Length: 179
Image 1 (cartoon, helix red, strand yellow):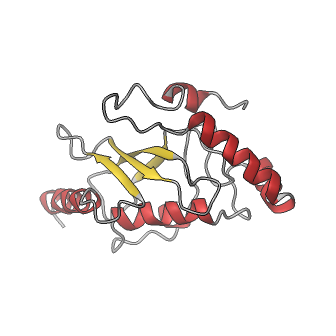
Image 2 (image 1 turned 180 degrees about the vertical axis):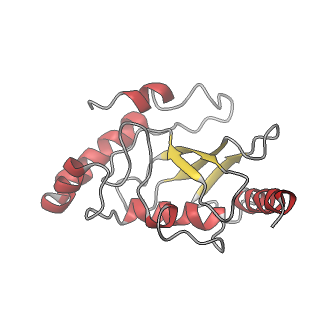
């Protein structure tokens, strides 16, 4: 497959993800017009009926020229409290971004899978073992901790101030792992 065709696939997947046809999950997609490979930024809503439900979370997406044969790189920029999301760097532990990757997957379906991961953590494959332990042993405490993090770190939707209203500070969200 040629480099040109791969870039066409990337562009098609980005446009599909930004189409607005699943606004309950994907709130906004900022496509990097200067570089089709990224970084691109995605804002998602927390899934309803979960402790994440009142949050808006920002992710960074970078794809390579080998996409769709290799998975894209996705990470949360918003600090998350989740067994499968690193509090240190926002990396996401989900099988479709690792050993279950398939070139048939589209970017939009990856975002839907990550939203599903927020609903249904996988404590048997954690990036944060301490959080996984709380999830498995004290679900009430886990939910309280998530709600606390959502209130403190989630994005505040304000169309007039798109980047000044990120939690408390996006870089702080990534570096502040002691909360």
